Image 1 (cartoon, rainbow, N blue to C red):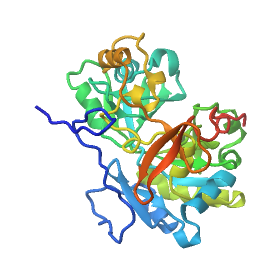
Image 2: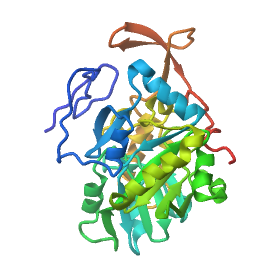
Image 3: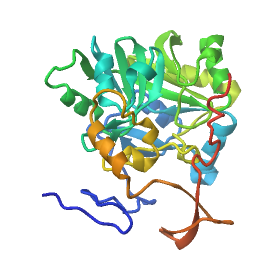
Image 4: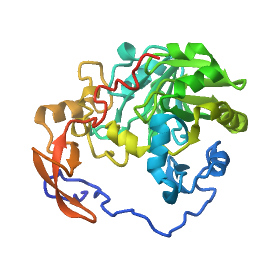
Length: 365
């Protein structure tokens, strides 16, 4: 029998929440072969990356501009005023390909693939386990009629997906493939993409896809991103072979637009209410607790977690993820304990905090 931890006001958990503060320290990360390096690793390092974390068993750049030079707020300004490039190879691509690809994907996500994911479109989706807990919240790319890529957040989707189909019920192959993305985010991103690829990039709809080339190498380009700014993701095929011919080319083409190499901006994604797996939710959270109930289609056919999710919706939840604003004038007060400032007043507010209708990323290009 598993033991549970009870925290005042929260539901019981099997595995306790990690409440230890990470903070800053003089600890160093050992670079080893146990954690993989992305195809962009050496070039992001040359661009000045000085802090890393690990994500999907890869080193993930987390800071370029030193604190004394403006730090993450300076990176934020590059993102929101100009254009930025991010090494996001940690978004590993899990390919599902074969005659039953659509049926398999429909069985493992909570949205209806057949109705909502046409070919050459991407969608934000969630994968749940049999208890209704969230396993991952990837962007799903349908790159062909019989081929899908899960561009995953930080959990082992490959092992889970292969396990789901270990009996061979679905006629598909499931593998991690050598495709690595960079994100091009910011108000000048469309100008940079147009220069590199052509004017047709302006016709890509929000969450749309195209197959094209960058500096002569095959890529898939999506109008998506982790910033809620106008942005694109460039998925380089055979990335381990050709990264050295694509990253420098993007930097060269981006000079006139003040292109900057930065880390994925958690400041901007928090403003936008974009969730981060492992930080805002994990496998013991269900979609209704973290503002993802709109993802749950209880009218479509059977899928993993459907029965549990139906029960959770009927019973209701004990806790919900909300947005809090601290400081200033407040109306609906709650109390929040901060690591250094103790207990402070906070106001529950609508999320996203900035651009709640997502007009910025959806703007007509």
